[in-house]
Length: 170
Image (cartoon, rainbow, N blue to C red):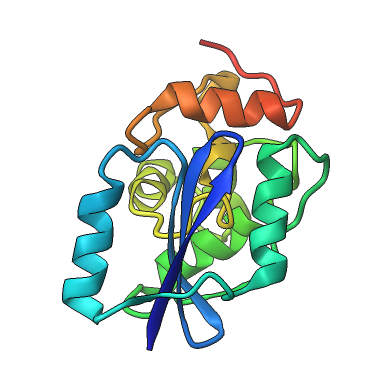
């Protein structure tokens, strides 16, 4: 059964969607289409609201946006339907520590696919678990901000990196 909750954070509402004990997807607090997304969840998955899901994870999310340093998110993620390449990239991405960044090329190399920087960018753009899967920590070569697929784009990415104490170039 798919369940969801909308977590109130200091940055706005954060959506957490679970199936059983695993996280199906998340949406960052900048998502202006939250109502449409909730309607899709109810329609496609017959999802129900359950504010009791993953309480420790909810607390970590709230603490993250309050600026608590070093937050690590403990959750099993649903990666069904992904290729082995995509899963390898996401596993490597999840290992990027709080306040750290890696370039798309460095992440490709860490995952065992040197030279696949552009493909890494595609995987990051389709990340279903933003924040928990820290795609905001993946930057362009030369420590430039690169892209970000949230509604607020690179503005939110930069703000999240600044919250963590990481600096990137324009």
